[in-house]
Image (tube, rainbow, N blue to C red; front, side, top):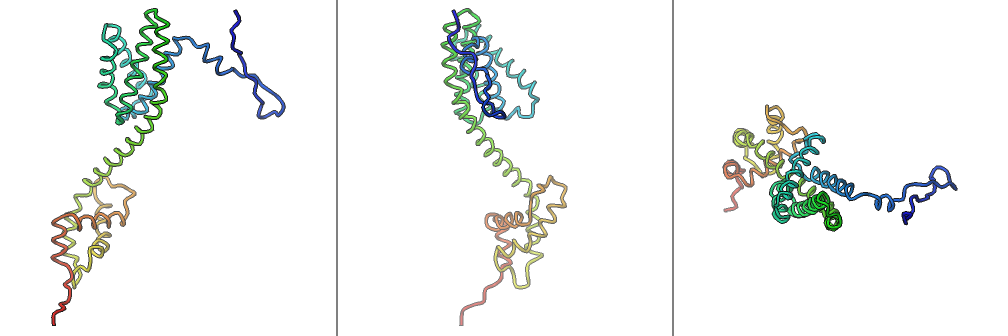
Length: 257
């Protein structure tokens, strides 16, 4: 019996107006894929998704990432084949692979999708092709969810990375605080500090110079304006800095007669 779907699709040639060219019809190509190749395609999708979301392995070479993922996949496959029920397999995937994702949604959708493709793979290898197709259909429902959850994962990763960098930057500049306290005393104007903003603005160039010339891992993008912001924050929030500032603050003239 002749295959009912057409093999080619004719589309206009962009470089030669009026001419048509035959290309493989997408629907035909996808419908001709064997169950085995659908499962392999799904495994590739899961590997790419895992690599995209798994920021713990972002520096690992691609070939090693693929090898590591396939080893994990085979471990779960053997567990399922050995009698582990699919729900327990999903929980195991969530604990071992899902834990590397920052998005709780991605942890869940990835674990469920991988469990479905493992079921499809095992059913196919065991001769239950119709059941394998059914499991594959369930898996397919998760691909779009994973792509959407990867967007959230990226946002969370950037947010957490910025927060970590902020904390690291905070700790990296704490060594400047004792020097700042010294300057609040040694560099006080004759009539005292007029305002916190005035103190921060005057001392920022000295602190900036010390920071840039220090042996610490200095952020090259740090500016005097950034340092002035640090000093203002210390004057407002650090108890010892506040006490030193107010101890050397400009005395307001008395209004008493």
